[in-house]
Image (cartoon, each protein chain N blue to C red):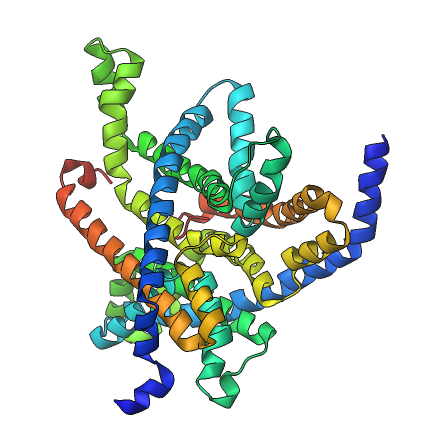
Length: 229
Length: 230
């Protein structure tokens, strides 16, 4: 009983900071998924256009982002870009976080959008072309709308990847959920395990429904593979 | 070429070549140990998850969901700070061991899910055929189901291995010396960001390129009937 009261006291004392951290986590992950989706959608559509030099460039971009850890990408955006001496590349930590996370997200989205467009049966595009639609019209009115439906399940699981990646931002001093927990531990070093469990619980409450949504959407809209979370 | 030196001083990087070589070696062996451990543990999780006894599969399913819904960094902290509390006094793990434990605990559910998908992909007739020739369920699993299951899921297993190698970079936060740790060391001593971090990224990309080549070889070698099944 005493243990419960003790821990409840900690939760009460910390919850304003934790919620603040959760809000920042939500904010950054939302911005990153929006910008990342916009870039990823553009690149994904461009990738299926079948223009070889462009494909090479996009694939290089994807390999660069997929081949190195996100933490290294974050360090490069935060430490290396300012060292180039170009003024507008000297990001503050918040901008660096958003920029690197958006780029990282876009690599996932590109592959999913490309896979979804390829998954639309070719008869759809052929039929559209044979009734006299141009290539652009076919994409715009026939292929892309059907493909978008297929991207819903993998997009939910990518959103979970993005949320989990925001934890890494604590190393450049963004006071998101994990960082708030670390600060709380400096105040109450005796309850280190309880506070980390509390952080884990916050992430779980945030991410688990998204994973369930992804699973549900997969049954509803079908799947085109994509990322595993 | 002199202008390039303002941006990337190769001579400085070469001075730290042995540090980076050591970092690469650390990253590779830590990943290898985690890979083996998480395949074993993942296999166990996959079998337990397929059990009909709710006392077995429910906790396992809960564990898998927990790992999938929380960031790796938080899991590393939980293991790093939590292990000493539950371990008997005197038995202490250093950072590398804690890191390996955390990464293994993190990776095995993913490996388990992949293996589970592989087992589900083996045609029923294979299992029925094996059973009807008088093999026990255990023999069927060992000689018929698992070999085909592993062959079917080689690409995602390799993909997850690539993720594992990248995930070792997070161990630098709990002061494990590995590839990113080498870059951090160089940065702290020389304060040249470009050389330190770009070199780290190039090394990771090199490892990734080798993984791509490896998966190409595996695909070519396994490109038999097991692959047409998918």
